[in-house]
Image 1 (cartoon, rainbow, N blue to C red):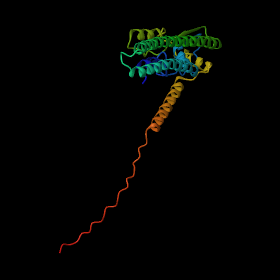
Image 2 (cartoon, rainbow, N blue to C red; image 1 turned 90 degrees about the horizontal axis):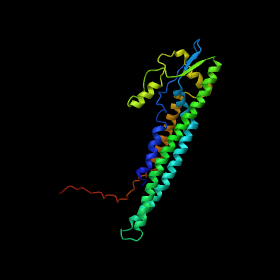
Image 3 (cartoon, helix red, strand yellow; image 1 turned 90 degrees about the vertical axis):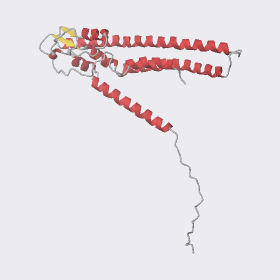
Image 4 (cartoon, helix red, strand yellow; image 1 turned 180 degrees about the vertical axis):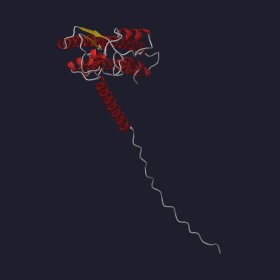
Length: 250
């Protein structure tokens, strides 16, 4: 049986992947089709970063990282199982018991160190993906601004609904993401930038993820069903019950 320690990396990764967007942004688009007669516009960079982070390339990169990390932990877990199997047939007085116990402690420590390193590396990977996404979006915004003859483009969110409201840090980040309080809707070029970059909408990404999850759950359920033993009822041959002749007493 696998130790619970090997699941710590899975829990951490699951907190970042597919459970929502990196910025916990609702799956809504801007829906604008034109820009007001102005040289000033706004763009929801956070929403576009969400889309890039949830894209196939970034998601596959994180999935590969998760698989590699889990493979490392599984190898250590197999070592622990082997040591436990050997120790189960020993007593404290056996000559090799002390050495096996030391090996067990070393492997356990290696699991903890590896888990911590994987968690740290994953956070670095995610930060790198966000930074790269920002650079790509920044370049695309400048291209759109140039084609639309825009002099100023501000990064902001237009809605006032804060998503992260349970912690002081979350609320502060949500407020700082809205430096402009009253940006005009017609001056929002978020949708233009998204189309310029050829990105899908968040709704499309969400639908795809939900479909993949449903497919995976169905496959897992089918596999579990197939693994169930088939109960058969054996037919027991019985001798026919002899007929009882009933006669009238004379």
